[in-house]
Amino acid sequence: MDWFVADDYSLGRLLFKEGLAVLYLVAFVCAVRQFRPLIGADGMLPVPRFVRGSSFRRHPSLFQWHYSDRYFAALGWTGAALAAVTAAGLTDRLPLAATMLVWLTMWLLYLSIVNVGQLWYGFGWESLLLEAGFLAVFLGNADTAPPLLILLAVRWLLFRLEFGAGLIKIRGDRCWRDLTCLYYHHETQPMPGPLSWYFHHLPRPLHRVEAAGNHFTQLVVPFGLFAPQPVAGIAASVMIVTQLWLVVSGNFSWLNWATIVLAVSVLPDAALGTVLPVPHGADTTPGPFVVAVLAATALVLVLSYWPARNLFAHRQLMNASFNPWHLANTYGAFGHVTRLRYEVVVEGTSAEVVTADTRWQPYEFRGKPGDVHRRPRQFAPYHLRLDWLMWFAAISPDYARSWFVPFVERLLRGDAATLKLLRHNPFVHAPPTFVRARLFRYRFTTPRERTESGAWWSREEVGEFLQPVSLRWP
Image (cartoon, rainbow, N blue to C red; front, side, top):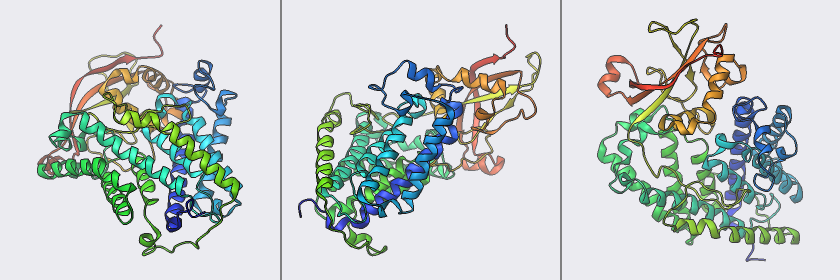
């Protein structure tokens, strides 16, 4: 069955699967560590309330039939354990049916979480992990030959990921067309990293080169993925280098790493074998496995109609799923780049009465800017869901309409699970009597300001985001 086998991609397949398993591990650990205050039974957007208004057909999830925080934690840790075992290479040594079952279980468990996660899970990389994870089910184990059709489906996913993102940009904000978006992006991106200050202060001509390089990588290079080698491998390598540039310049959860993992699958053994040992070639192709691969490929082809049509639509959707199983999605980011950075600063006080002289103490978040002297941290591929939504809230209060007041209520109660999401709680001994939120304009300091003050940020107050509130109100 020469048509079925991709002989020269054994190592690429292995690295893709083990890299994807690492991302699954990160995703499950993120879910377990953050779910209680976000979507738990007493969370800001509780799952039990959500499933009462939904159905399995619209939001397929194991939690449609039963939910408890203990049950969620059990399923989350099960997924993390399976991902850890898979990342260690043990799953690949199991019989083929068992290997496929492990991958299918991880996909089903994470799908169950995403489909009840609501706003907290409304990010493109959630669907990306699920779509790639579904394809991984049909990549076989160490004893089976790499299936060509599934590897081509992985390339098709990578193509849509990059080309869709490129189209969103070139059709969107004018600054992408005049190559000036990077004048702002490093400063205004959702979660700056430790090197973002330095990237922001690169010479403007280099920022224009960054933007032009992005267009080349996302609008031209993806077509090379379907060319013969070495062109396909070169195209994938360009994408990997570009994604590593994004990794060091900001925090985008596991989006960049997932793209890298997808691109690695395109590299042939001849290239990877120069730095890594190539696994012993396997040529087993069981009949039922061939049937499963053909069925999965047919499903991908059918479902690809909607994202393919979206690529050329006048109003291209960004990060959308066309089915509740998150298969064959559309991707893209930063169709619009914000020019100014706004931050919501949440503060509390122990005063019995709020006056003009009341002393307010700020809550510090783990990732988003707060203290101007605190250097941005590197968290990706770990995903700080609350911090990300705080960035959206600063852009428009509508993003926070459903969860911000419940968040403040939990601060007023001194809720332990919610406080674990934060870096610093200024009220260790007793909850505050009042909490408020103010909106600030943040910008990176200039090199001179940085030298003189030691601050990474400069800020000025814009206005009130939430007036002082208290649980003591009648």
